[in-house]
Image (cartoon, rainbow, N blue to C red; front, side, top):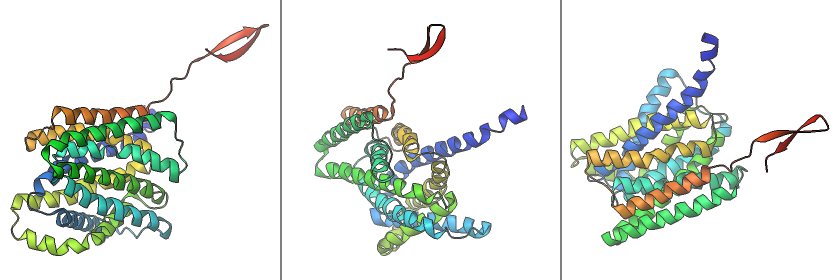
Length: 314
């Protein structure tokens, strides 16, 4: 029994790591919405990255983790600037314009963009179903944008910012994947977070100024964002990503919008309107189409002249 159970453990750990990431990333949308009432987008991003880098740095110091190899620095640097830096600022800004559920729905276009960039930069195949899924998901994003137009231009701006965040997220994932061939998940996350903190350094003055007047709950939300959805969740993400493909890992985030809508309803009393939800369903439907596979027909054995031969069922 022991020998049969052992091989299942390596397959189970990446799944558990991906689930931890999904839950913590969903909670991040709610925390951003809450902390954003007291902190500007750049200040919140710098505070989050600083808390995350500090937590990860302490872990690396205790475990005596060396810097990543030189071959991994390019991917870590690009993902650090785009994903840990630009993405955080754009998402924080977007969530000041739209509710947490809407932001999660729009950002969830990211997995499709990951597949597109993976095909272009990593040589991944681009099947017709992927193109069809991208079209459906884009229609969903447009629906979300139009549904928010009644709230004024700032709401439309929020959707655009969330779309930019999705692009940065996808580019960051595709950049990080090759780096994980030589760097560990902890190395990639720690130094990516450090790069993101450096990229957000121009907002340090805003953080110091706003922290003096911010309520304790907003500051604790910022620290939470740095320690859990960043330090922990990005590490578990990198761990799982190193053991599968970028497109498959992107698929694990499909559950995030549903969790965000539930969490934002419970914590903030926010629920997107029916048209916004319909647009989000289109986004998810496009993702589902892009990840589906054409059904293959089972082979059958046809005997001719007493000799078996395998044929495809027409």
